[in-house]
Each structure stands twice: as structure tokens, then as C-alpha cells.
Length: 597
Image (tube, rainbow, N blue to C red; front, side):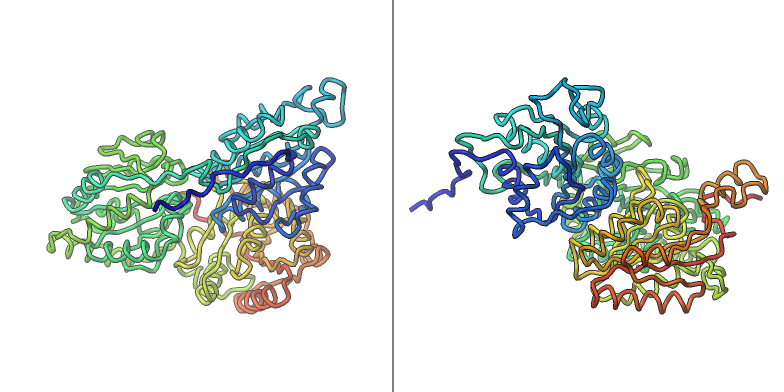
């Protein structure tokens, strides 16, 4: 006897738009919503207050910070990050965080209020679509999808489309503009889905024949290379798949490097890891790409590249350095066919979801029989490369000078993160902290590094780590940020204090917007740039304490280790934000720039 089919939807004789909106978010497993309240969303706020057992509305200090938090929340849960803000400045303040999430392939939905439709054209406070501020048009130029809800009759169609767009692969950011009066109106005879699968599906496609073709190209090469992009994160978070990849890499002696956004997705201590390539990259990849730099007797170039889920932007490729082009087949795999072959000419482009592609590639790799002589030669080459220092300034990384060198600061953090039970999530902000972390931080799973390098906004690491900690309260969540970014969005520390979130920030203090001043000095050498963009010697310990955090000031390696250990314990036991102000040697310059001869 055929079992009864579960109904796809539940009918409601009448349900308000605000109530229906929360039904959809409940289907998506959303527990936290981030934003700043306002009058234009009052009916949604009223429903949220009635459903506090299902949802927590996290009141942030500014809407951009709310979007960063939703981004961090989405990255750790794999679910929808939701931002709920009011009309006018609420919507425009959230825009930067929304654009950043879009560029970072994060599933974020921004819901912004709008003035009542019945008052369009009358000069209503914070008027938008009816006047000069067409928020819907603004978001159309910034996100995957946006819609203005004009009636209860079109709400479900447009809202479900926004969720589909956000949860698709690659992940994206979407926006809904909801007029105040529409949110209070009733949908009659509404059919509300019972499961998210009733209105959306996720791509999970591959082509085993093309995976075999890619594997054959690797097997036929003398010096192949695997290049992992940020789009591999979801696939490689699965431990079984990651271990299977490590086993195949060992078998084939296949070196692996990652883009900056994929740092640490493949263990950086693995014998065949070349660590990061591109912005502030490791020293090892350039020796493999051009082996003659290491040994004049070796051939001048490697001969096969397989790129997985990287759009090969400027930061991932040293501004599209020709050295990345192999003297042999170039394979690029991505679900977004629009990025295939756009930066480099390719020999094989494969449209596939990277997790499924890897499964096919790894399964066939288990049966493969490589040429052992070639594998042995390649193994010796990689061993020889890894005998060289991976760092631009290895002595400085090992230094115990005071004030602490930023290179050494990253060494200390690497050592401490290895001891974190269950692994940690590290969020890197924009600025010099990116260069120091990408180059000098050594990361192995289950530690994960998250960044926002496609847009690079200051403050991302300040806000996102709060959303991450709310998503995973049992994991250590750390933001590595500069003093400028901390001043820009540090008020969100009080959000963490308000909701008893034990996030940890390590703030690199140099009293300067140093990435800019050092960059200007590189391009226009002159002493005038020294501290030209100084920020006024703010007391960030008092600032953090005033916002409800426990704060530490450190200047030496042993002080950092002690403070970091204390911060982890206090964050987990006291559920209180922790801020470490690291006064480091500000004369040091990250490895962003070529060494001048």
C-alpha cells in the first residue's frame, strides 16, 4: 500500500504578511535576526515580539554591523542570515554589509522597511521608492535579487524567490523592500509551504566523465598542481571528503595551494601543502610554479593546473600573473560558468558543484595507478621546496622582541589556535591584518579562517565574529582586526556584551591607517607618509571596557599568549566579549609589495 503523501503546504484562511514572513524564516531554520528597529517595520517587530521562543532579534548598534553579523551567522550555520532594518538610512546603512556578503558568496537576506504605500508621494518621513531614494533600485545594482512588495497577493512569490536566490549555489545575497502598511495586510486563503524543499532546491551536479578527464590530465603531467578557491569551503568542511583528498594527494604526491579566501581549507602543515598563493602568499608556490628559481637545472615551469571553485580574481592570482599559466593543460571547475576562462585561457572548463566533482575525482583517483617514477621525483621536489622557509621574514616570525613584531604575533596566535579544542573560527578584517594573517598564520582544520577579500570592507571582522559566535556558542570565535576598523565598528562590542556573546578580538594597534600610509610610501617614497594617517592615540582598552568587554593591553609574545588563554577561558565561562589590544612594532610592512632591489 502506497504511504500517504505529506501535504506540500498548509492553508490559512487568513494570515498577515508579517506572520507569513516569519513562517518562511522558520522553515529555513533561522533563529537569529540582526538589525536596528524602526517604525517602518513595526508590524514585523510586533510579530517577532510574540514569537520570542522561535526568534531572537539581535539589536545591533548600526545596520552595517548587523549585516556583517548576519554574514558571520550564515557562514557558520550554512543557513540564511537575515537582516531586518527600517526604511531610508536603515536600508542604506545595511547596504555595505549586504554587498560584502554578495561578493563573499554568503546567504544573506536583507529585509528593509518602506514608507506606507498609501502615503507614497506625500512627503512621508524617510520616503523612498516614491521619491528620490529608490532603495529597490540601489539593491538591484548590488545584490543577486531584490523586489518591492506591492501587495499581499505577490508577497509569497517574491519572498520565496528572494530566499531561493540567497540559498542557491553559489550562495548569494538578496533584498526585500516591505512597505509598512503591506506588512500588516492579510493574505486570504494562503498556502504556506510545509518544508523549504517545497519551494527551493540546491544544485548538486557533476560529470564523472569530465572528472575522469581532469584526473587523467593530472596523471599525465610531471608537475601538476591543485589550486583550491574559497568556493571549496562547504565541500571541505566535511571531514570525510577532506581526509579522502589528503589521501589522494599523498598517493599522487600532488601539491596543493589555496587562494587567500581559501586559506586553511587544506591543512597547511600537510607535506604537500604549498599554502596560499596570491595576496601576501606563501613563498613556496612560486618555487613550484617556476622550479628554476630554486634550482637552475630544473625546468622553468610546471605543466598542469586544476583550479577548483576560484573565480581567479586579482588577489588570488597576483594580478593575473602569467607565471600561473602552466606549460600544459589548464582545468577550471566552477558552478558559475561565467567565471570559466575569463581570466586565463583554459583547456578544460567543467561546470559542476565542487563537492560532487571532488567525490567523482576522488573515487576515480582511488582506482588510478600513477607512474611511480614521476611521483617519486615530484615528491622529492616538494620536499625540497618545503625545506625552504615559507615566510618572507622567518627570523622576525621567530622573534621575541618587544614591542611584539606582527610576524611574531601571528606565530603566537598560530600556536594558541592549534590548542583550541574542536578548532576555532578566525575572522580577518581589512587592512594590514590581512597581510600579516595570510602570510604568517599557519592554519590546519578544524580551525577555519574567514575573510572578505572580494570587497575588503573595514569592520567586517568586528561584526561577523559576533554573528559567528551566536551561531556556534560552543566554538572559539576570534576576530583579527586593525585599530582603524575597530574604531569604525567597535561599538558592536556592546552588542556582544548585551547578548552575552563571548567573542574575542585581537586588535593590531599602531595608531595609524597603516595599510594606506605604507602603501603610499611604497608608490611615492617620502618620509612624509610616516604616521600621516595617524588616528590620535585612542585608549582602546578603555573604549572596549566602556562597551562591556574585558580588555587586555599587550606588547610582548608571552603577554599575548597569556591574554589569549585568559580570553578564551573568560569568553566561555563568563560569556563576555574579550578584546586584546596588541601594541606592535608599527614600522613593519606586510608582504604586500615586491622587495625593492
